[in-house]
Amino acid sequence: MLHDLPQKMIWFRLRAALCDAVCAPEVAGLGVDAGRDEIRWTNSDRARTCIIQYTTGGHGVLEHDLTKERWQLPVGTLFLLNTPAPLTYIKPPGVSWESLWVCYEGEAARRLSDGFIARYGNVVETHENSAVISALVELYRCGLSPHPSPFLASRLLYNCLITLGEHLASGGRPVWVARACRSIERSAARGKVDLESIALESGLSRFHFTRRFHEHIGMSPHRYFTACRMNRARELIQTTDHPIREIGRGLGFEDYAYFCRAFRRFTGITPGSVDRPRQARRGRRLTTG
Image 1 (cartoon, rainbow, N blue to C red):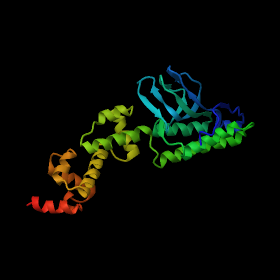
Image 2: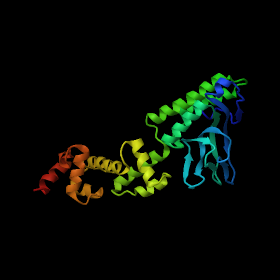
Image 3: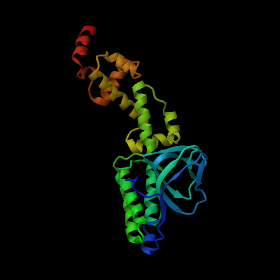
């Protein structure tokens, strides 16, 4: 889909009072920033505008000017930015960064963007064939026409934003949430988790990480970690012949009684009630008394 598009910058130059008040795309582009040097786009003193930028190749970085927190922008991620803002997006040295982007204005568009950023953060995971990127491509194609209608361009931009909202509301998670979940899930297999480090990797303080994680997942990070351990325990009990006590110990539960209580709290049954492979059932009869 993206490979068929010409790489260029498009100025919409649309001046329709009705559209300006709602959604007005100003400039869009598809292109590659390359070279050995770092390139930085600062936004703290930038004129008022809104940006959606999707990485189609290589990778970039979004950096907070004050805290120096960084968010990676590999292929499959987009960032939202309403300027002016203390955020800088960067092409790192020695790599290329290809992206599809649009700058836009309009009070309705800005309110939507503000809401998405406040609830989901600036960086969002998606993919090239998603409805979100299809809507962004449709807007770009509109700008390629010789005389784009301001009303059509406004409608396509609004559709892009609404589609992004649907993606986020239906489970499309911000990048930091998806990565935090994966880190916690990997930690669950080892039985130990460092939530402080995961919070720092997410670009948030431990307090804000816990609060916002709960908003997106519906439980605290520690409870999610425990739930992942219980799911892993159940899987191991069902598919291996390892003694249940050893399974619990391998997942970080040194106290077998506590492991049994936690397992029952999360699953509604005791570990011994889980169906096991036939050889494990034979072994259990021989080793318990």
